[in-house]
Image (cartoon, rainbow, N blue to C red; front, side, top):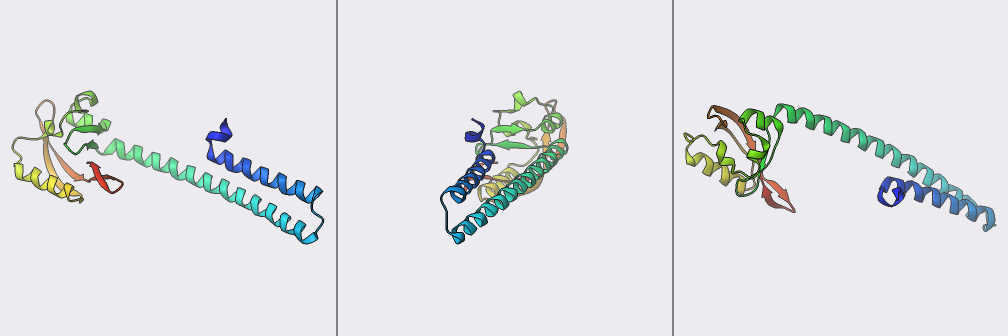
Length: 170
């Protein structure tokens, strides 16, 4: 079943199959020297393609590992939240919970406004929403309140998240 589900394994299996077919054809069915030469060249091309494929796979795995490592560093040092278009929280990282004093369970499904400091003018949030709904990233310093009522300031960048060109989240 590994061959069916793993594209890389399928590619290797295909390379081997092509080489075997070409070798069988050369050994048993081809008498023309030019045809034999072309098939040998095809075998080398498949071998080179296989090596390139393995190199690309290794480099992709290295990049993926680096990306996961960077995401880990980012996640440990930055507070991150994501909300739907109605401002309902659908993701928070652990650092967000630590800073806000809320648990993930308390935040997920709650309106982002539970963090809103009542002293912040409503025009600030109107500008924020107008910017995001316009497809742009909002940058600003936001005063929030923790679960126990303490104020904290966040230097924020809030970007729309798109799927198929349509804004689906923040």
